[in-house]
Amino acid sequence: MVKIKLDKERSLRYDLNAMEKFEDVTGKSLADPKTLQENIRIKDMKALLWVGLLFEDPSLTLEQLGSMVDTDNLDVLAIALNAYGGKGNDGKSPL
Image (cartoon, helix red, strand yellow):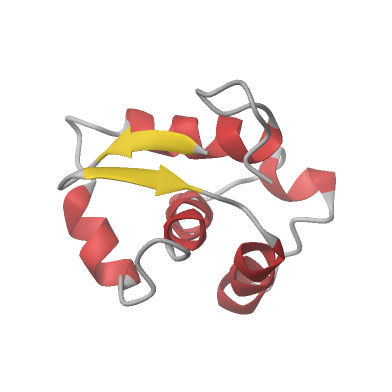
């Protein structure tokens, strides 16, 4: 898991439920490597961050998450992209 700081310390985890929820919200598949490499939008990055947080806080909404991220902590979007595509800050895959 990858730890990030938002309103409090939270953890990112990308299981099949998260990947399915991303597809439901964006209409894009995380099974396609191009999804996060070509023409990624802020909306997609926000959705990726959100679905990774849902296992820990299923009641979290996209709107609530959006109010937690601003110009002071935009790096959490890059952390989510790296977490999905690579290793977490514990050295293990977040998948």
